[in-house]
Image (cartoon, rainbow, N blue to C red; front, side, top):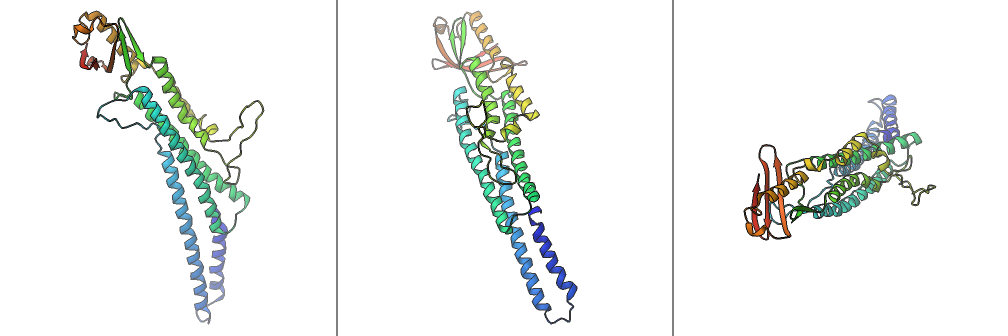
Length: 319
């Protein structure tokens, strides 16, 4: 109620004055009551307008908080798992669009706040202005923080889930198994995708104190590009964000059931030691290079299971 402090004081004074001076025998009681009702209706309209704008701002913040930054393309064939590059390229492209829309929504908040002040007719004291702009800036900060934390938690869960996040190709060149993309590339992509979630908060610029104006870029010595005072500088040091990023950085690829190095090494050992070719097809044993699309899953209870296709022939390996 900071912005309405003066309006409430004026309304209270206007209602109190007639009640102190007039009685029910006064000739102008009816006129006084008409004026009071008109003022109350005007005040009610003002409150409803502020509530409406506040509700719109709250919806924008909720949309930002619930923003999913790891969107996935719906597979054409049910059950099909897209490749690593396709999954992350699509996620990054959709992320660009979603963040751009979210940044525009935050800019809309400044317009709504300006309207709220115009409805009140005047700007309050400097302390009140600082408190009000600071209040909504904290709301934006909280929404962005929850957006980052929620997406990083989802990504960490998916990396350790039994449900494949993406598929990889392997090139069997006896006695080696070559991954496409390679392990280092997969690791770099995964870590980059997590860190990029935090970096996207650079798109959301902080306001100047006591205003709803975005802080202009500042020229800083020893920096090639102007420094933009964004929410990134406040969200990146968050201990929970750092912990979630570190969890992704220290991920052990061999422990993941979605794309497991240990699994592929087991496939390699099985293929070499079996002496019967791949999946019981001796005719594939002597081929120098066979392009294979595989889905792997390793559990302590069931051991190794590999579903795949070689030259159009589906196969199942178990060990």
